[in-house]
Image 1 (tube, one colour):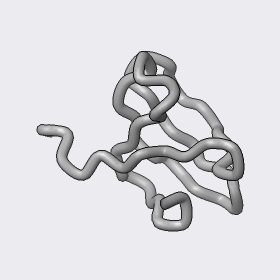
Image 2 (tube, helix red, strand yellow; image 1 turned 180 degrees about the horizontal axis):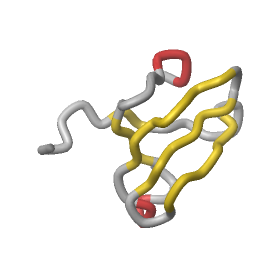
Image 3 (cartoon, helix red, strand yellow; image 1 turned 90 degrees about the horizontal axis):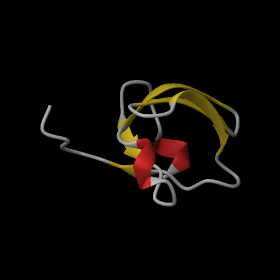
Length: 59
């Protein structure tokens, strides 16, 4: 999944549901920047985090 991440995609962190829905801001190498509803902007290493794509978030 991580190789498919593109800016604008909606994702969730399966181990941190309290962070809410996140929107991918950028993806460079193994680092993805995601702006989460409840946590703000975070840089995550995709070697350690598996984000779940949210194809239809009702938006």
